Image (cartoon, rainbow, N blue to C red):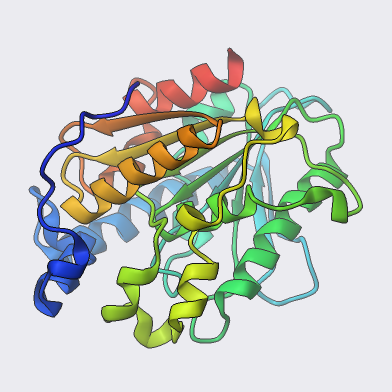
Length: 301
């Protein structure tokens, strides 16, 4: 895995017309396999089917409260051999902070649990009911909950898709010393994420979020990075993006990867061939999928 050579990805977002910017940040319009409406329907259908199957296995704890809010629930799927020292893969779904659900996000459960990894799928409050600060606070609580409940874990590995990748990357900036425990975070997989929120201000996405320019800059991991500390410099950060993601999504991932490397993080970048914004995560149900293999190798290296 390495950085792609810098190359033309189209004009910078500020040079785009409103219509073009809206298209760049409409991931469903870039799929080569299905039209915009069908690619989303398929994502929900496939995710629902695999999640129902995972829930039927009974090796799980569903709707576990990690906080006091109604939205603060997570599902934990365990491997057949349960021990106190399991690695935990904590998944944060996408949906532009206003859609999506843990209830159709268990794509990665079959191959990861088969390999001896516990998988936790996190629910969080969605806009317009909640704002980004609330979401980030909830994701932090979910991480702390896993650490407190399973203190002998072999590592917590965060994974976020799309808006979930933004939340995961912001959570990595947490000063955990301020909390009761320091979670044993050993890696993070950021998949087709958004790391600079300013372009979002000028699209339909902000209708529900109602972010100001100050909000966008304060909550953009691209501009919030600090030099890697001892606890994070050894944390493996994998940025993945689909070949059929929009040029803006590709550029966001590449730019963020370069920022992370500049600040001393152990970051890697991969552009995955022949996948779009949705099947890049759907294919995690396959053991031989390249991203599944990267996750397994990272956790067991």
